[in-house]
Image (cartoon, rainbow, N blue to C red):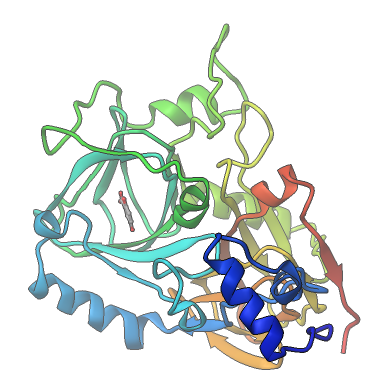
Length: 352
Ligand code: GTQ
């Protein structure tokens, strides 16, 4: 960091005097914030799902019901952000793991924060958004756009777990939080399951469509379709040195990211992949879907397998490796916001 001005008793006394007039000296604080490059407070962190997270989640079922909790979620709290206004995984994004037990309902509500669900475990529970229901399976990416009614339920005989990714800190910094509970548990369903994919997800759009919202109209980007696409593309083998085969989820109406505040991608790393180091300004949350490997972040090695979650903070060098298996990973970040503001930067390193 650049050198700070000297602190003297005279200066301190002056600062104390002007503080009463709600004035403060910029020269004492600016250098800590206008840094040469990003200095994120969040730290690289790995959550081992089967070993650490799952037992805690199952225990939460006995601690509180989904109804009483409203949303029974264990937050993935970045240890570098313990003093932040709210427990979050990066400065701009929230991550939590939500569990719904058989027969439970998470009642309908809406809020201005946008949410994604990335399904970790279990099969057959549903999320309903503004009158359309979707049955969720591992690897599915489900969107709850800002200010849409949503409820979750589990009519199966197994607990179901998914990751919630929300833009809570972004909405907080803009002071735009609105929330409203729905008077019933469930918002009325008025469209058949699969309706949004039929309308928007086949490379066609309804004639005369008027979808103007900034969020993709597709409710569920199913893993079955994503995986098939990656598999077919892998046959040609055009892997990126850093990212493997990486596909971004888009809004088919605009070609932009699927969500206005959260960028989402899925990647396939082939067997024996040894990625080139990369860094970018997007603090990124990764969820492993299939396979095993490791990611080295600023010299720390994270060994991961299915269902593990880890975070790479802004501007941290990192690279991915696999050994005997190919691997599939989902990731999300605040990149759409950075791109709109002209702030996004990335850099490729040299292979070790
Ligand atoms: O499902 O509506 O993890 O509102 C945090 C806030 C989930 C949800 C979270 C929420 C939700």
